[in-house]
Length: 564
Ligand SMILES: Cc1cc2nc3c(=O)[nH]c(=O)nc-3n(C[C@H](O)[C@H](O)[C@H](O)COP(=O)(O)OP(=O)(O)OC[C@H]3O[C@@H](n4cnc5c(N)ncnc54)[C@H](O)[C@@H]3O)c2cc1C
Ligand SMILES: *[C@@H]1O[C@H](CO)[C@@H](O)[C@H](O)[C@H]1NC(C)=O
Ligand SMILES: *[C@@H]1O[C@H](CO)[C@@H](O)[C@H](O)[C@H]1NC(C)=O
Ligand SMILES: *[C@@H]1O[C@H](CO)[C@@H](O)[C@H](O)[C@H]1NC(C)=O
Ligand SMILES: *[C@@H]1O[C@H](CO)[C@@H](O)[C@H](O)[C@H]1NC(C)=O
Ligand SMILES: *[C@@H]1O[C@H](CO)[C@@H](O)[C@H](O)[C@H]1NC(C)=O
Ligand SMILES: *[C@@H]1O[C@H](CO)[C@@H](O)[C@H](O)[C@H]1NC(C)=O
Image (cartoon, rainbow, N blue to C red; front, side, top):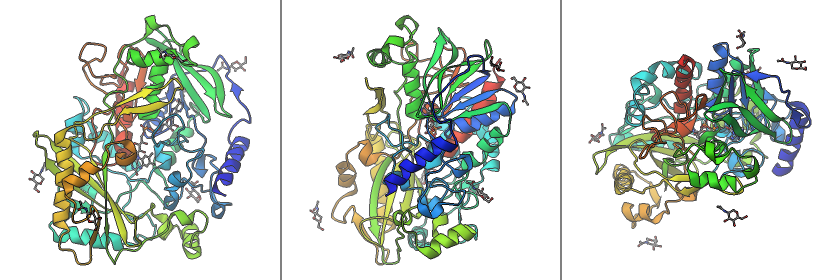
């Protein structure tokens, strides 16, 4: 049923929002900026660059998502409304039940390939970064004091909320009350996280979401809205960027292919002054660099040996940069507890058969359980562990009401800021990206922090009446448990990939250099090619990263506009 709905929806998309077939590009239209990818990085950047009076083309490979932009994928109970599956917080986990036509098919990891990218499919968790996220990871010009103005701009447009239902109530809060109350008794302090982003050591609070009016909101409902009102802004959906067309170190345009609909051909930047920005995500931007002859020679040789090979830029023009290295993600470690107070709500069932009162409540007044992200996320809590190697490591714990029993809560521990392990992504001859070296727990001090965090939580919850540890069982040590979970994406992955085109001063073309982009996000060896998305993050942030990426894009816009 769900599958058939998606197929029909896809056809409807073609019929309405897109030209019915591929459109060959006019050869004379050029743009000051061509931005590839409409996710957390691409949309805010497109808004800021078009606001400054430039002609901006935003290219997105996927179809429209939110109803606001002509998206049509939805369950029957949303027909006749302006909402799609992407707009309703309670349906956000549908990406896991039915990813067809939504998730990217050219990578071995979960990512959204629709308008909005991750910001269209994610759970909307929205965090002001801890100052140390910038200070410990980023180079000069990108420290927390430098990011202050961008942070304020982003949170003025997308303030976020701790009570998504518009009546201000939190529905099904039993899990929050039980676990938050237990942490409080053990000495953890309650915080309103985005008012005190620096207080992330033995604190807990409600989840904060980018939702507005109990709809997804975020960049799709703010930055893209203002951009689209400008005559100088264009958006092409269902259009895949194949490669950047360049002459030596100068990008002249982008070669595009249509994805069922959309555009095909070469679209050029304004001669002389035009620029190309990759914002296709940690895997998408790296792949585009490879296909454009920029990356480690082993990967460029794979592209050379693929269907791209005959038309790939000559090896005399290849730029040898460490694209794909420095890969990172939050290390996820799932634990499960159960408590008789906890009440499960079946968000997955709400796709086909929402509880009638809850459906009406949501549709009529934007209140009730469906106004909240599946599967009832919270509390969130934080601790900083002093690493054995002297580096403090930030743990972000995220609880949800879901597990092996109706009274279960699954809690994921994310290891973020301070983690030193890194992995690698590569490309295959089929032009798909793979995580070849998972970035999880490759260093002892990272592992020790994960174990210590679990020990501390076990200690904090040891006297809670009625609480049962389901995983790890009481007879299993924290160390044994952490070691028993394979350090691979399917078991530890958090969908928070970063780092494949690292920002830094140490030009990666030089021996020992690790950076792919400079402090203006410009690719080393190129005059006018930039990367603005999760790829440029040198290290992991504390919490779910989308807000940090939007802030980085705001900040990057100022730096790019300032470049002569
Ligand atoms: C299921 C899921 C849940 C998540 N939950 C949260 C959460 O609750 N809170 C949070 O903060 N973070 C969450 N994240 C992570 C967050 O969404 C991402 O970190 C963020 O969106 C990354 O931003 P980005 O700009 O780097 O790339 P993306 O947002 O992934 O955007 C990249 C865009 O580029 C497009 N693209 C790629 N290649 C091409 C090409 N060749 N041509 C044209 N277009 C292309 C893609 O279709 C996509 O739209 C989640 C991620 C996933 C997958
Ligand atoms: C491009 O060429 C077409 C056909 O010659 C013309 O109608 C259009 O106005 C031109 N556009 C620009 C931006 O010059
Ligand atoms: C649109 O872009 C052109 C070319 O960059 C510029 O000359 C013009 O002022 C812009 N218009 C607006 C309304 O910003
Ligand atoms: C749907 O319509 C309502 C009422 O006009 C509006 O507030 C909301 O932003 C719209 N949502 C979308 C996703 O278009
Ligand atoms: C975090 O709190 C612990 C005590 O619980 C303390 O030892 C540690 O120094 C704190 N870390 C930071 C970075 O504040
Ligand atoms: C190129 O592809 C062929 C398969 O068609 C394979 O046998 C060969 O090893 C590849 N060469 C390189 C350098 O990857
Ligand atoms: C822990 O106890 C469970 C039964 O509750 C048992 O199945 C498991 O083997 C035990 N594990 C260890 C390491 O003793």
